[in-house]
Image (tube, rainbow, N blue to C red; front, side):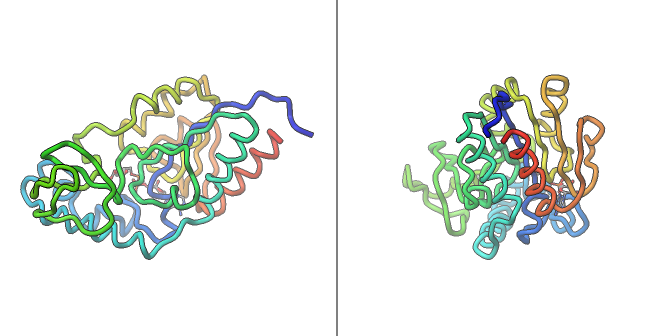
Amino acid sequence: MRSTKRLPRIVVLTGAGVSRESGLATFRDAGGAWQQVRMEDVATPEGFRRDPGRVHAFYNARRAQLDAVAPNAAHLALAALEREWVARGGAFLLVTQNVDDLHTRAGSALLLQMHGALRRARCLRCGQSFDWQGDTAVDSVCPRCRRAGGVRPDIVWFGEVPMHLEAIGEALEGCGLFVSIGTSGSVYPAAGFVAGVRGRAHTVELNLEPSDGAALFDEARHGPATLVVPEYVAGLLERFG
Ligand code: APR
């Protein structure tokens, strides 16, 4: 028996915690990326100007790791939720801060990567961005303008404007259910999304532990994403079955 309940528009936000159990490090947990290298050196335009080779090496290592990891049950549950929700006539958007390709490989299609993607690069000479599979280097040639020396990772660094903010703002404007997964809630503008929808949308945090913004959520389930996300998705589909 199909529910006649109107389906709320869902916006899901994910962070590095959703990929942790696939084997990718987070940033701020013990052993996270920002305990191995200084973000100022590898995730800012100034760091890239100072030592582009070091920045290329940091992202080359992270890009190479993608071949050794696979989507986990949380990625798969979110892709299934998208398919099911749309099939029932609902609106859905997955916004990720992650630059890995695991949501895409899990089958998520209604997906915006607001901090860019490891498997893309951008040319500082012609401004174009494009798929990029191998290493980038200081002498990489742009496949569009054919000039060397201007290729950089298509990643949003600190101090740069995240991608797709207009589309994300529109989706948040109309959302009835906001679910934040695997993020510490410490980097804006993503960390501010929940405050923007509170009162209009039911807000849920699915995270290993309470995030910096935990108090802003109506509901929270704490535990590893591969347990709490599939469970939450199953309950949601049951409720709006
Ligand atoms: N399941 C669920 N949550 C987890 C798991 C797990 N297995 N492991 C860790 N977490 C949670 C942590 O408790 C933490 O709240 O994931 C969160 C990871 O937080 P961060 O390391 O800060 O990563 P994130 O929130 O994605 O960082 C945001 O900061 O450095 C920039 O651009 C980078 O996109 C990144 C942004």
